[in-house]
Image (tube, helix red, strand yellow):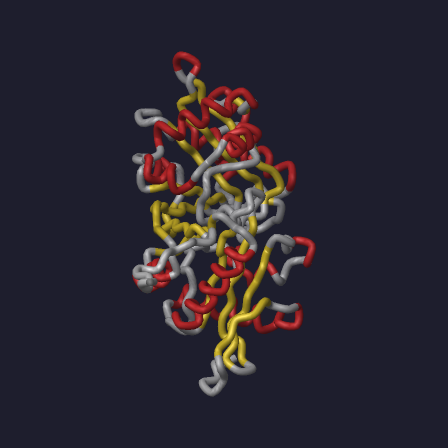
Length: 345
């Protein structure tokens, strides 16, 4: 598996015969991340549950690997020393969920190939999330990615849901969202999201309709990595028919800490987050108990402009496990004019 300096580097689409090489690359990247060895370079996502990596995905039944995943492999001669994995969402955007290689030169080639393929397929936007790592951010910037938001990932360890507020008490705080809430959820997010971030994310009416139905939540580093059995949305009613908070939750379909549930909360300034967190955990616990995943952990995401939410999560037993950056690249074809034209006549 060591890179061959005599072999010409190239990037190609992965084949089923590359399975063992892909497993080894991903395993080495995860190990290097946890040990800080620098043996492999990755996006540095601080996801404690190792099952969210490619290495663990291939240990699952093949039916759990979604057909929307595309994987490219980097080779030097006959030796594979890097991979890029892309998830395609319902909107048609691509998200790079894994970018592992022995050095940044290999990662740059993988990025260039993914960007070229995105443009060739008419993909409008190419997303990625990474740790606050200067080398990775520089690499992404050179490939045309623009960082636009910071977020912190919080983890509630497995076994904590049993101590949450009873589900009956939770339902007294929140109510299930309805299709008619779509516009009000959009208004809530417009009031709490910086305009610069809104312009980068380009959320349209279809997403808000899906948000009210519980099948969509704001983009996060963990969004394309989770494998959830069900998702739901709840809201906190405010004065004059407005919505003061929006709670999105997801319940994992597999048992074990390597398959976390998800909790996402958006709220207006001045709203106490603690009852919302307790209500969300209670609802997750109630639903998880029915599918046998009540002992799983819970992941929550807080963006830098969501003031006070991180403190509230910490007070409820969550632990911050890493700071991340979200970046996006417009992968549409660009038409550029030359700076100078030859004189004629």
